[in-house]
Length: 79
Image 1: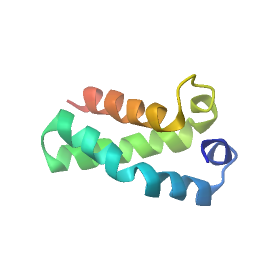
Image 2 (image 1 turned 120 degrees about the horizontal axis):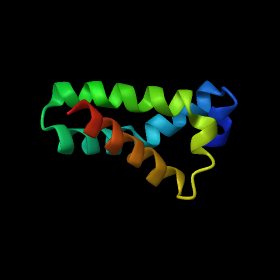
Image 3 (image 1 turned 60 degrees about the horizontal axis):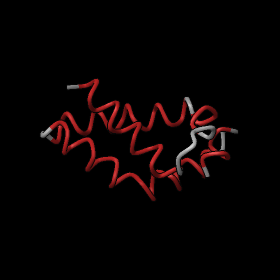
């Protein structure tokens, strides 16, 4: 699905979000502690996934791990 997202497929992107949205929110909330900050980081995470899907497809780790890593890094930056 990430590969399809890289080609601009919005349905594939929505499927990724449906599959990983809750997990990415939990990562953001665990790092940031507040729902408001987690919501902001979640938005930035998925914007990053959309904008950089092509480069994320080249990551050596599985898609789930790659996206959760994006959430982790965004949350650390938001802190």
